[in-house]
Image 1: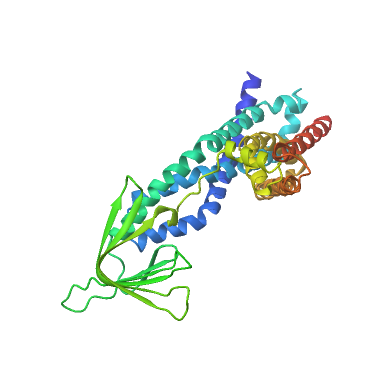
Image 2: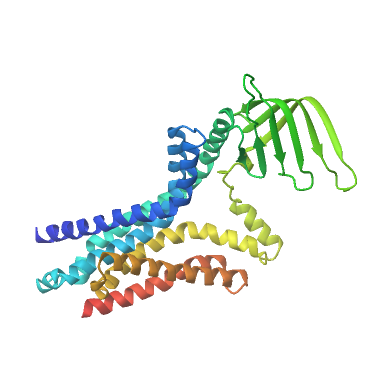
Length: 361
């Protein structure tokens, strides 16, 4: 019964700092996107439900990064507090070894690792696919809603849409479009009326412009073109959307490209390394959580804020080693598989040695 009570007690000590640090890290990483979503909600009139959908589809990508950091912060904070209050000394005086007291940490680490793995393998691909659909709906809603009059609207990158103020007593539906998506052929389009059209089947949004003129300048600077039209459809591709997600190149295509180039294509090597990281990074969360036990005991006087800082420093060191390994991969010193897993091997060795040293004290 004593074993069970201690396991539950340590497990509860882990959850509180884990939840707080996870929420804080997600908030920090989502700050930029939150500002953009609030702008859509307040100034563009986008529905609150659509904003929540975007938030939900962005969250899995951030959880893959924040879960391991929150895990090591939780173990550092929990064991730092237990060591500072001499509770850990009392437990070890009662005959419990540090390895036995860490049993709850092992279970906790396995849960964090499993959740990170699920987010990396299933959450991110699901998010990337569905984020495009949400982006199309947002883009359509932003354009279907009456565009702000007298304001240069930039719903599409490299495209500016301006609707002039209506004259008193008139319903002026004029529109001005500056299309710079093709740098070789920028266009200025002016029309008297416009209509938004959507085609969910082909993921296309278009503006149907009526009774207008297209101004363009060919490559020859001395020439100028002016085209009049009664009806003109201006297609707005979803790939140009603010929230468009880039699809990953299939691993078979990457391997084929490497075979054809003799495994010297640095870009393909880097992309192959990213595939190996899909499993290596969730496994790193397992090592991080266990590493937090000796780190927390050593830095017991750092407190909650100190535990947060130490945890972030450990993760920064891991990312520095990752960058170094990526450099070694691109310079053909090591293979992409070794580059993805070498940081985990280094941290595993450090964790085992440090854990053994602290347990012998």
